[in-house]
Image (tube, rainbow, N blue to C red):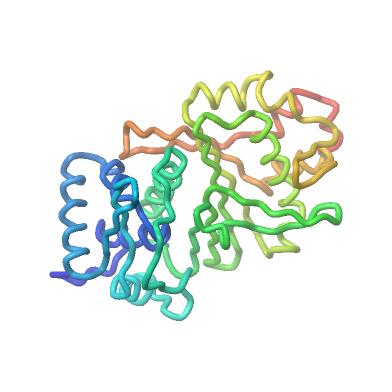
Length: 297
């Protein structure tokens, strides 16, 4: 490149880091996420430079979509000079990497969150932070046990942050508007069960859970309406992975901050302000449904 810049908040390095995380990145996503026409033009010029100088390579899928992947030079540059973690990378370089991403609403929602996270936390992205999306199922998961049974959480995005004295884990669930209320309910049950032994089993101090939904109307109907997911909770709750999760486990998980739950829509029409996360008090909603549960919390 013409000038050596190793700060992540530079647009060039955000592009390289996003490609590193997704391993094969649709060019269309980068064109769509630009905040305005000026940034879109900058992205196009930077991509040309990154390819010309051997940091990225472009590949075309069978449906003629163009994808980006890192070259060995781009990989070494990112892990050594930007992340400064040559001996502890998220994954090892492969000279041949197949197209792993499908261009879809779900895939774009994953990319949008990661792009926004990189942008907002540019100064704190180090080798102590690991970001995985669900195209990388070898790492985008967490195992736990509940009532003697093993289970696995598989979020859409998983972020590990080991900076400082405590370990923080962030789970992101993207809803394109097609998931049934029952599926969202089961996810909440599983996250509550996971939280019960998170510190003992996984040395986790802080759990943050972010739900990104397709519209404000869907947020209101799903989380705030008495006819939404709240009506599905009972004294004992189940999913395909775990059974008989008592309501007191769920109340404690979300009441005492063991799981901090946030909601937002994806404001895709304003890429300069994609999210407006608001904390959601699930325990308060549950106690409104059944006031007698307050004696269990």
